[in-house]
Picture 1 (cartoon, rainbow, N blue to C red):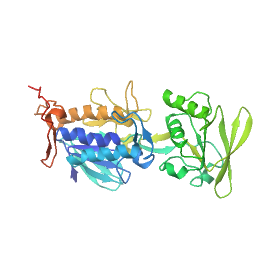
Picture 2 (cartoon, rainbow, N blue to C red):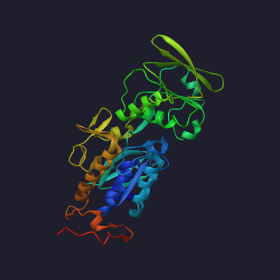
Picture 3 (cartoon, helix red, strand yellow):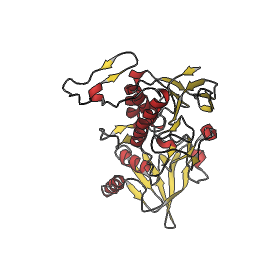
Picture 4 (cartoon, rainbow, N blue to C red):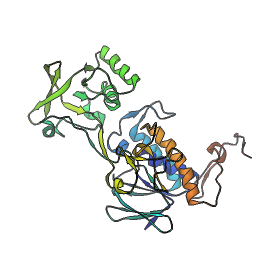
Length: 349
């Protein structure tokens, strides 16, 4: 039996940051993730994707962000159960929970924080009869290594942030980059839309809207796509076709834990992101509440508030007084201490 203070389901960015926030409160964490390494989607699906909305980083690659988060939490010595899926949860007489994985590993904690991102997921595929034939032979649903497309002819389909961001990034990598979207309007950030249109004017991106990819061509490997625009079909040479239509999320076994679910997400309150089951919290993309935004920085905020309530559950007889890290420094579980700069004036009475 693995025992800890906070059991975190999901080792993506939100789960990893929870380790740090809990550590400041001297709470120990253990993380469970079905993937073989920490980082969630940022490590598994798009480690080379640039992220632009992390405070203090004008631009950071998803893989670098997760590596930094792992490094930040190391001082608090978290435990990991990787390559296993959290399957069942049982509440004990003492109020704690036992979570068992699909491989039978048991974990016990007074607080459970579900930070599973989108849960288990699969890409939304375009409705093309030939799509399966070219998977791993020119059709990719995720971009793990942009260098794969160096000096290649690439066609991206989609109208969201992922399609826009990758089109902008690969415009300087591919020999020819085409973005196809079925509408003239895009769903992504306005800055990204403007950048794509600017790259079109500079002839770095071939933008085709409103249009759809209707067929794929090639023998052993993809070598062309057929695009239909206003009833007319156009043949476009392509080494790779990347449809970025988002992911189809599934909560998996967590959906059977007696939690209140709305549109495949876990409902929480906005005080501390606790679910309808006391002691079980949901933070990051896996939760839902009025005004919810699925952003990594929002997950960080939710994790911070969740840890405050977790402290009260674990130590009901103690009172925690918030002190800024610039004043108090950081105390690790190994007894080490990173002192605050001496120039900082302590203003806490």
